[in-house]
Length: 181
Image (cartoon, rainbow, N blue to C red; front, side):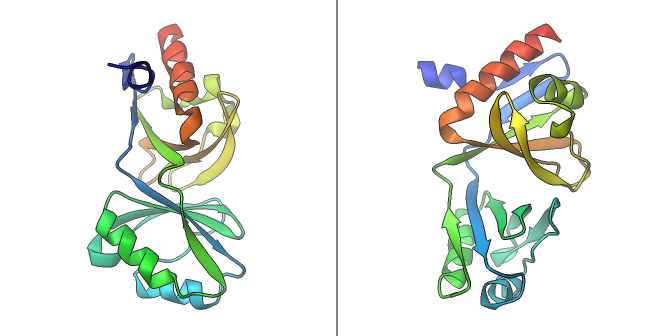
């Protein structure tokens, strides 16, 4: 195993599990208004914008599972494991003139964190600002990095969306903190 692979290896200890989810396709939806052709095209795909600060799960093209997390009033991140559905969504949104889908799959990596001690871990490597309720999402600082934290579904796990280049750094902090728990 190379140095990078070792740095990104799953962490599983003491009530915490952290796994890099490389198979997700991630995009930023950027739009000028919450009404318009991009939002209409999104609705035709079975998806809608979550409210600011919310993370919602939905079925998109082909019935594929999607997670949408509102990052700002004009940007929502869209994620799925289904490459064909991701491509279908991108094709449907491509002609829109009042917004766009920007594929971030090569630059943003989701880290799935679950276990009984999620809140303790996130507080130690971030702050209480890293704690989000079920169905919520927001951008905060974790391990001195800017990270989107989303709590999809019932909130039993968290998805940390981090710039790919900083993923080894985040895992280093998680690994060191779990060792101290």
